[in-house]
Amino acid sequence: MIIEELQKDQIPALKNKETVKLGVIRYLLAQMKNREIELRPQHQEMNDGEAFRVLKKQIKKRTEVIEEFRKAGRQDLVDKETAELEIIKEYFSKYEPQFSADS
Figure 1 (cartoon, rainbow, N blue to C red):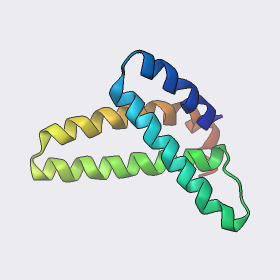
Figure 2: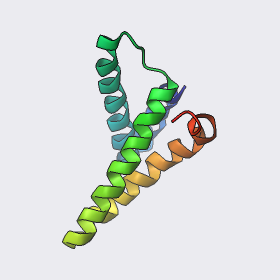
Figure 3: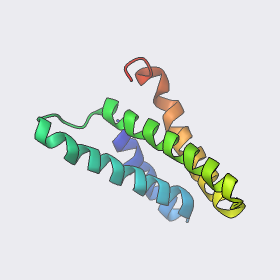
């Protein structure tokens, strides 16, 4: 469900030339594919719970990176990461009621 929505949202982002959103979607899909590969040796499959965990991990990572950039005085990178974080949070908030109890 989450992966399908990301894949579906790629097309309008590409058509509307929303480069930041498109980049975030592609990055999230790549991270989810990496997670799927990590699960293979354990004979587990990628599901929405795992996809939600990837979103949660990316939010944590971006928040930490923003703080580091802020400490370093790199406002340009803070703005870039903040814009990307907002896009990730949009997807996270859609699925949070479903998966927050599981995580």
